[in-house]
Image 1 (cartoon, rainbow, N blue to C red):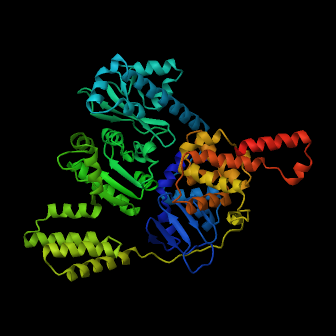
Image 2: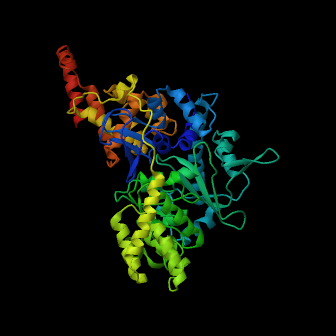
Length: 584
């Protein structure tokens, strides 16, 4: 098996959009890109690339998968050959040892260790040692329910209290150091990573504690200290409180800057707030947000660093076709302070009246250039035209051009002509070469085509929906795993897909399509990609996981007419009774 760590490197080094665009002429359509499929003859584009999930799918022939699958199909290579091909393009060295069992076991131990660490910190907060930290949280307006919900805690200001506690629980120094909750000193001893800090557990989508943030209660060290990257935690690819915010039905996420901002918003009822983890928004985080929201309101601090981070976030979300609004908080530096000063209702009004990302950018240009003098107005218009040229929607361009022309009292035709010239130049530069080296659909990929099935069978529909739900809502796996096993799946491809997903989830490993493809056939990869592509806008309630699982089990337990004929009276009575209980 190829290690997940190498697949992870390849995922970010071999971007699917860049790789596929060297074979297919792609055009952007909102969040996605489309083009003529290279695997079958067509006149209307049905081939779609999804940059947010790093996958592709053709609605015409059913071919789909990740970047590795695409190279396998287009270049007629096996899995390892395709990896070598992509690694060569990305300048990566193929791993010599492909065994990853040891790493998987370590990840499981770290997740268990982190959960025990969070319990320890929470207990310390509620003890005499955490008196000052508890008073600090109360002083920030937090309620006991909020403290419990977020599992807040306190790391004692002692040398090795956590180390001794975890050692007593059976964890080795090596595991503690790998989790980055302790460090090894120069003399060979171990000391706690976090000391004298209010602790914020960082929880992933499945409810695992993957890292920690700590706020200092004294003058020593940095004000905030975050867990460094570990085998289970990559801060550039996670968001604080997304485990709570992901269930929002509004399609809107509020992006805050710090732990307390987000916790304060949640306590005030804005449970769709999330935060980056000590860094500006990254490309990976923006993709993660796009999977849960079609609109984002940026609520960063009003200082210089916050404004710079806001601009970066706007640029990242614009590539994913996520609508962006920006909060302009007067008389408060951040959401926490605003809510404390003015209350929940005023903050809700602020959210509803937030500036658009374009308004934010135009306002910034006006602060740079003095539009009351000729030179400043000309400089502003030059930058304004460059900004507006990047807006794809013609109506939106027209609104901003008209408003700016009226404000500066100039003919809007001159602005329009400048913007159109800039757009033509940009489009000429982005024009890609036509598709080349198109190969016929490989014979061994025939299994990826849709197989005829009885669409009326409740169990088969439930199987499909359950696979989609697990990929979208991985936190439901635990309850599903208690009801069914891979053997309960009637469809052979679905059984293989569920087996691969459950293996990844059981060991806390990444489970995106690119990580699953080495354990699946090309047909299974295409099947899963197709299910996700056709159900991108489908939202689930947590209780549906159990309903789907029960439906899968009922389908498996159905007996054929021949089997029923051969049953004894006792066997038939038992079967009918069991079936009736399941239906209830």
